[in-house]
Structure formats: structure tokens, C-alpha cells
Length: 136
Image (cartoon, rainbow, N blue to C red; front, side, top):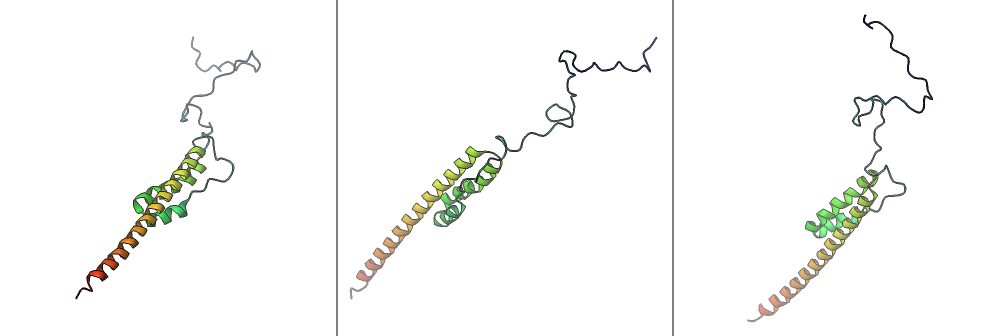
């Protein structure tokens, strides 16, 4: 005859030699059940303790005004620092802060050198124009 309508056998009692039923497989992204907890936030183990490194954003913005081709990467790296730190990427945040500072200092130095050269050229040009225009 058929077993239709009969109740299934009871589950094995706990303590049957350590064998436990496998977890239900199903719809989670990790192959676990629907009630499986999500993975921890951040790429490297959660939010780190302590204050984040200085993002050098003010220095990067000032360097953007001095030499914008090199100031742009400084601002981009400075903007990445807090996001990487909050995502748990401590090494990435420290590296982005160092790159932001490096690009900002290079841009500031180039801006100062260009300004000094411009002032020298103006002074030489003004002195040269005054000496040649007085010959009457």
C-alpha cells in the first residue's frame, strides 16, 4: 500500500553522537537560509577604532588654486580618505591621505615657482621697456 497520509518519523534526539542536521539551504546570497546575517560592513573587518588620518582637503583645495592640473588629484585623494576609513580600509585611507598631501605639496611648490618666475619676467620686462623707450 502507499504511505500517503502517514506522519513522518520524528527527528533524532539531541546528543546522538554529534550529528546534527545540515542547515537549510535556500535563498541567501551565501547559500544559507533567509535568516542568515549579512556580512560585516566594510571591506576589511568593520569600522576601525580611533580617529581617521588627516585628509588634507584644505591643503588640496589651496593647491588646486595654485596649479590645477596637479591639484585635481590632490582633491580626489583627499575626498577618498574618510570613505575608505569608514569602510574599514585603514591602509587605503592612510595611502590616500599620503598621496593627497604629496600632490598638494607638489602643486603648491609649482605654483610658488611659477609666480616667482612671472614676477621676475615682469620686473625684467618693465626694466627693459623703460630703458629702450627713453632713447629720443
